[in-house]
Length: 426
Ligand code: UD1
Image (cartoon, rainbow, N blue to C red):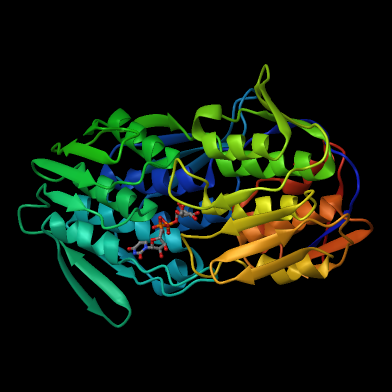
């Protein structure tokens, strides 16, 4: 199995291109199910999860063709066409590997009148049930049946009907499924306590480009006027704010300076303000956001929460950075119950982190030392790469397939800004 070998201690300087957002891509791809016309997505990141989602859509009868991007663009261009759906089943084997597969549920019920989707079960970072996704569909008139680990959802004979969906707490995926189902439901749907993550706005903008009627973008109340049909469109995936934030942490932890080319300040307010609080200089560059280490890192007190607050998907990377801060930081995870699996690995590299229930106390140390470490999930893996970039000596990160799910051309991008990092097979 591949591993990533890093010889740390080199400050990173230069430009890093930011790819299309994984989490936006994974909710834009299933939009293809909502129309029989072609949907072309530009700036799609080259990631294992995007490929897996493409294969799932192929199994449902969606044709996919991939072209290279124009020379001035990153990523890929994919045209998807669901002229005729041949299946409405998302099988266990696929959903188990990629939880986001559950996002075919809403669009399939809206377009085909039915869907059978495997329940995802637990995952490395917690239970992650889908009850809110199901309640949202029920509010639009769908009938649900759960048996043998699958949920079968059926629209009433005349199709889904608009309704009010009030989420008891914020869920990104449930908001996405609700939105994709509501655009073709008869009448008006109101989604209250909707997630406000920038990826939701990206989804709404793509649906509007396909002919949907949605109001309340960027707010916690989305109002959707159902339409009879959607048409094809071309849409460019937003820049990945989590990838940009991760590389900002790389500049911070190595005492370097990076321009995050294509990163959008308006999608990452709390990430940038937390970096500033940690002592980094942030300014707008010609092509993106410039992040520079100005001196020692200051400790932080951070709590994860839905957007616009600090994202859970940045917690592990900030923790790696704060292991070298001058003082004690406190991180609290409020979204997922088991998202500290990087802690023992970071401690093996010399960090001083103690988990107390939902919080982690990070006492800054003078240096980290390279070690063989095991990646456990996507963002945890990145925290180990960051620690390796700063550590004395050699760090080997095992199980790199986690990184391939969410970081496009990681070694290439880091090598180009001065990191000593390589992928080793076998
Ligand atoms: C998405 C992101 C993930 C990110 C997370 C939170 C994608 C592909 N993934 O995941 O990277 O970490 O948002 O920003 O976009 N919950 C329920 N019932 C439900 C749905 C969710 O109890 O039906 C709980 C979850 O277990 C979790 C919380 O709600 O504790 C928030 O999860 P949610 O926002 O739904 O995360 P995802 O959409 O799975």
